[in-house]
Length: 155
Image (tube, rainbow, N blue to C red; front, top):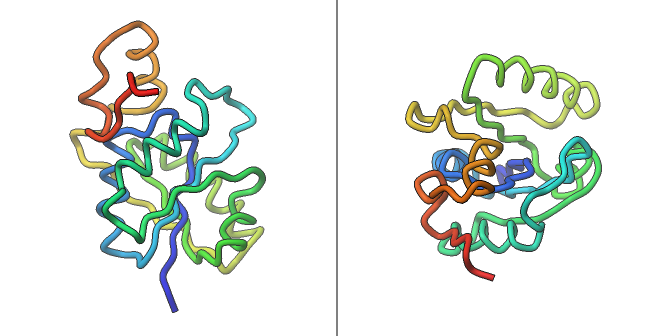
C-alpha cells in the first residue's frame, strides 16, 4: 500500500521552511499532497491560483509531489485522497502545543490517519509565512525566505 501524506496549510506564502519539510518527508512517503486549505481565520494575501503555481514550480521535478486546494475538514480531505498520514512541521514548543491539540482532535474524528511531526531545521525556526508576508508587504527583500523557484514579481 502506498504511503500518502497530506501536508496542509495556507502557504501564504510557501517558505524555505515548508520546502525543507517536504524534501525531508519525501524519504518517508511515496507521495505527498501539499494541500492549500481555506483558513476561516485568515484572509489570504496571495491568490490561491498563484500559490498553487508557485508550489508546483518548486516541485516540478518530482512527480510524487502534488499540489491541491481544498475546503472543509483536513481529515475529510485526507480520506478523499486515500492519504493515511498528515504531515506537520514544528518550529517551536508553542507550535507543538497547538499542533498536538489539532492532531488529537483529528484522531478523534478519524482513527486511521496518523500525524507525523517533523522538526524544522534550526536555520528555519524563525521563518513563518506571517513574518515573510510583512517583509513583502513593506517592500523588503524576502527572497532568502522563499524557495528559489518562487518569483514574486511574476504574473
